[in-house]
Length: 419
Ligand code: EPU
Image (cartoon, rainbow, N blue to C red; front, side, top):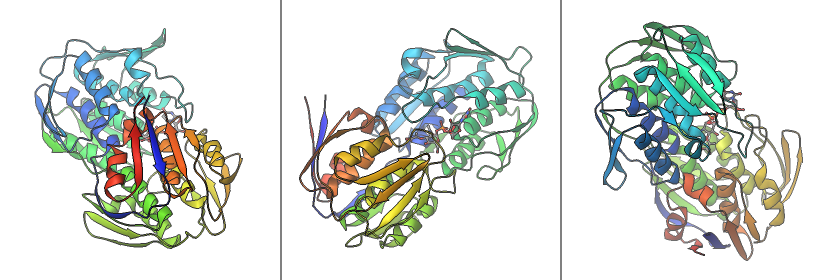
């Protein structure tokens, strides 16, 4: 199995182009199931999760080809099946995003119920409650969700008990086929949802309010395929900002969307980073040693849980103590034990991580059980004394397009070793 080997201590300098966002591309692929025809998706990141989505859509009968790097043609003229198997869903929870579009188009869908996940229990009860309010009949049998719409879908008022990103996306997609008006309350406000609504509106849907707590969908319009470019990945960009902050580096990130990452750049400014930005670029100069900052994760526009681990790596060498509070997922501290093996001084109590910044940390063999935890160990490895070997690289490959090549180009001593 591949591993990433990093010799820490190099300061980073140069430009990094930012890829399309994984969490915008996954719902965009799912949305192609909503109507027959040929879609063109560009700026699609080169990730294992995208390959999994492509396999999933092919199981339903979609014909998919990659015409250029990062450009996919997805033909959903004919759907042959509406079953998403356990084998695919267990490798990627976001597979659940096909449920809304399949119900909307075919009136039925059967997908494996995603099990628990390394970062938390992550149920999908709110997705299902939303579909039921729209008129779907749902049965949970033998580890599968069986959903049908015997009388079609109709508009409804739905209040999400908890803010859920893919739950909002899934129900919003189903509601495009529901007759009449659907009002979704307590919606997630993530930029990726605004992007999805933009794509659906381009397809002919009538969706207002994406990016606010209330989304209103006037369902039933005929949809048509579109040609769309995926928005930039704010978490990939944020990870490179953390890499600059921890190494005292100087990076310019291009093709990104600084307005979607303000909460992260503001926090990094508090650590002493100098940051300037334009519409689609951001430049960062890391401090000699970061100042400590407290962080509490929250749904957008709060501090993203997907950046918590990377900022914890920065705090591990901060000039003082900090407190990090994870409020979204109950088990998103899998990186802490590994960072401790690199000499970090971190104590966990309930939702809080108490980080006492040290003047330096050291390299070690580490591994992680989820994507962002793996990314945080790469960030830590860039500053650690000596060599860090990161195993289970497949987690990284799910969400970062060749992270080691991008970091090599700006001066990091990092390589992938096979075997
Ligand atoms: N929740 C429920 N019931 C539901 C749905 C969610 O209780 O039906 C709970 C979850 O257990 C969690 C909270 O609500 O405690 C929020 O979860 P959410 O549904 O918002 O998460 P998600 O949609 O499954 C997406 C991203 C995650 C990201 C979270 C939070 C995608 C494909 N995934 O997950 O991305 O961490 O939102 O922002 O968009 C990642 O990229 O590494 C990643 C995990």
